[in-house]
Length: 181
Image (cartoon, helix red, strand yellow):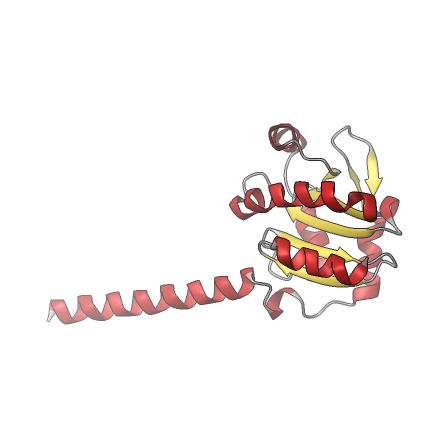
C-alpha cells in the first residue's frame, strides 16, 4: 500500500515539475505573458522619462538616446541568463554602435556590484542603476512577471518593436536591426 502511495506522489511531483518546466521555457522564450496588457506609447514615454544614476552617479534618462535604435536590457549581476547574454550585447554594441544602435543596461542591482561586474566584463555601453525599482519600470513596457533578463528594442522614433523575456539571441537581434537600419 505504501508503495502505491509513493508512486502516486512521485508521478504527481513529476507532472508538476514538467508543467513548471514548460511554463518557464515558454516565458523565457518571450511568451505572451511578457507582452500583453501595456499601453505601449504611454509606457515607452515613461521609460524615456525615468531618471536613474549611471555608474558615475550622474542622473540619466533614456531620453538622452532618442533618435537611436535603442536596446534596453533589464538585468542583474546575480542573474545567470543575464550574465550569458551580456557578452553578446558587448559584441553587438561594438558592431552596430556606429550605425545608430545603442544598448543600455538597467540594473536591478546595487551600484557597487554593477561597477565590479562592468569592469570584469568590460561593458562598452551605458549602465544605469535602477535597483529593484527597475523591475517596476520593466513592468511598464510589458514584463508582467518581473523576471530577468528582459529586453525591449525601440526604433529611432521611440516605438516599441520587440520585447523579450529571457535571453535575447544574437540572430534575433541581427534580424531586428536588419529591419530597422
